[in-house]
Amino acid sequence: MTADTRSQRLDALLAASPVIPVITVPELAHAVPLARALVAGGITTLEITLRTPVARDAAKAIMAEVPEAVVGLGTVLTPADLETAHDLGARFALSPGATPELLRAAAASDMVFMPGIATPSDLMQVLAAGFTVAKFFPAVPAGGMAALKALGGPFPQARFCPTGGIGEADAKAWLALPNVAAVGGSWLAPEAEIRAGNFAAITERARRTLAALR
Image (cartoon, rainbow, N blue to C red; front, side, top):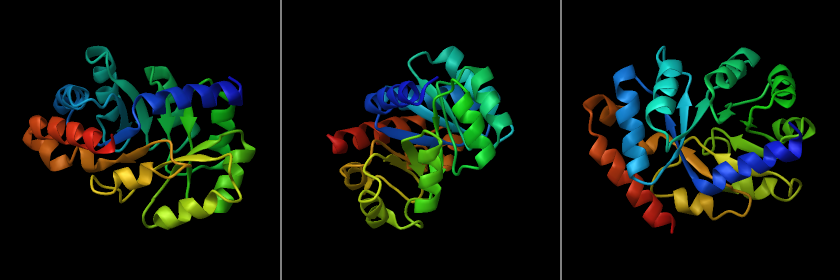
């Protein structure tokens, strides 16, 4: 896949759902009800993080049973993780950072991939590898909106999906930045509500978030 094609496919994903919940699935039984709750609230692009033993099976179950969901794998740390995302049929993959090995593997793959950056040097490596959309993580500890505004000067070609410390109250402000294509965060699906099976609250929060962004 060429860099331009990869960028176009990622642009289409982000345009369809500019808010991406960062989801940690504690138990496999939660996966499908959680995905359905978010889709019912209007959020269809989902990041399933590879942080629990059931993450891979959770992603498979959602893809099989919730066809409206656009499933990506997050916390992709190695080329092997990227291959897992590809083999599962995930639509995209995200990383909290980017090693040279991971960037090389992603550039050679037909997987739509969003590498993570936190500094200008990180961003320079990502751009050199052919990626123009990056995950800015951890967004608030790494300098917040002021940092992204500053990066827009020397790197006008770069766009970002900030995650890490963003919540319902400030998602709209982040998304208003000209170099922000989408925002992500775990506030949309808190683990306590997932474990309690309070999926109605998750649906309502998704609806409320999208309404506020409009």
